[in-house]
Image (tube, rainbow, N blue to C red):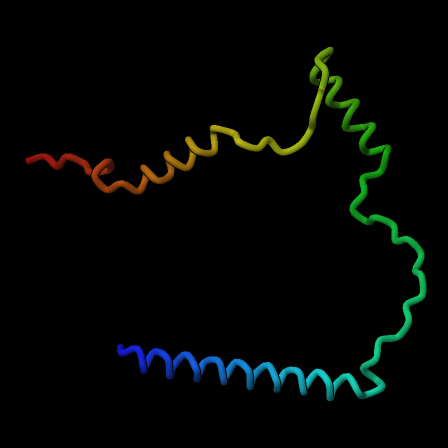
Length: 109
């Protein structure tokens, strides 16, 4: 591709980009002039209750059950354990299970 062709393609790309930008600007200007598209003032809303919250009674029951199971051990954190090594081991076992050479049976001759 010659330098003149490259320059020509570059200039056409710039012209098309400018044309698209002008069309978008024109569309936003036209649609913004209609009164039904103007934003209405928002009244302050009452705080919404968290529907995903766990009731304190449920948390107390789970904590009591854990304390009963764990004994005198102190529970520091309940949550997801990130960086567990067993996930890598399981993934490796899964990938190795697809190895056809590993599953070949020696046929009797």
